[in-house]
Length: 301
Image 1 (cartoon, one colour):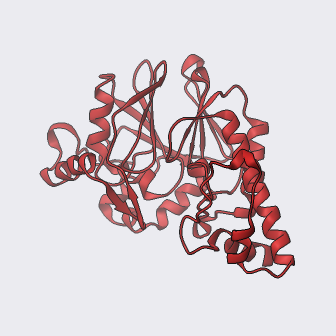
Image 2 (cartoon, rainbow, N blue to C red):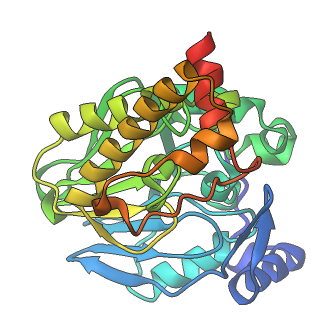
Image 3 (cartoon, rainbow, N blue to C red):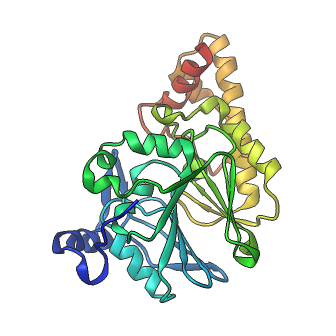
């Protein structure tokens, strides 16, 4: 698939203005406000994180190029390139999108034609339904390559493993493991410490959430730290705990539904163990009972 080359000297003035604005001001999308594009931060040897303007991006510097994980909201392609160029002069050769949402895929089409975009196969199907990927200019940002359950990119110390363990945030959530750095990028499968956003329109499942993370915990080894979707760096144990948190939420929803409680009451009554004291229990969207309401709907099917 050919992408329009709009970076560097040939980028249009309007898109350049968007990219610059995206670095300087908060951006809004889908009812959320995202902080401006941040500065690149070193995570480990050859691995970096770029926060802001959507989901956290990861930058993996290899011998002959750069793997970029997630391209943020639209208009941030040049800003990402500028940040990457501050640590290496190697070109971006591969992009992995952790899932379909525009704060993680929005600037795909702003990269050159020889950049390979890779996603889980369900994520591609979801991306094809999005309005911005239906127009000619957006179609060039669709993935070139998909995988089903696992895919390894590169070899030796540069190896990167992509994993899919089942539905959670969406039905196409990729976990990206940088083997030599012992770091994993979770995308929004683990966005932050708090109630998850479940995108049922794209196959997400609150019932499966904890189970999916449990499979990941059992199937992935030798990871110490985690780049999450929308927060600072965390530890592997935080990811393990997040699986437990979501499983406890499902157990609570089952008991509350059986007791005839409304979603709002059930949400108010949810009191997880002290280890989760720092979690944000305010539903992401849809009112005070949204997470429980979604679980009720799944349980009633």
